[in-house]
Image (tube, rainbow, N blue to C red; front, side, top):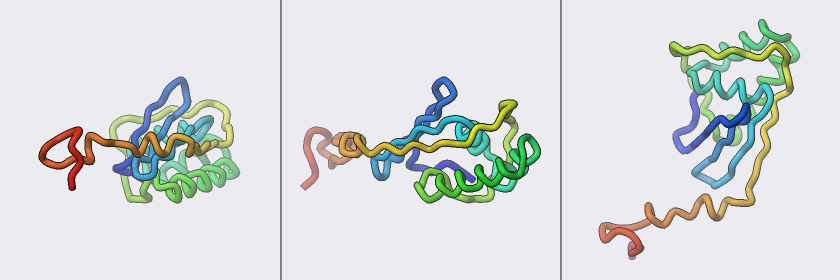
Length: 129
């Protein structure tokens, strides 16, 4: 799995804030979802993530993570590609908390407003014809 090219993200105090620049939707990922996001960011593929979760927690946790990964793909945040582990590893916490993906659309208009990149050769503030 790889993070989409039009996706920006930042981890703050155990919460991952993700912005889909294509549609202006932003997300909050918490609990085990934040840990899974770090695995994806580190280059782990779907099978590797699910195998690690099954070993560290249980099969039920693996099923919950599988649904979470499907949700990330359907929202366009990650692409289900055959990435492989990079040099860095991620430590999972001792207890499993069901991942949560909260979706916010209240700032879509502001996040999609990008006048500086919607210009021609004359530059900003001149919009192209």
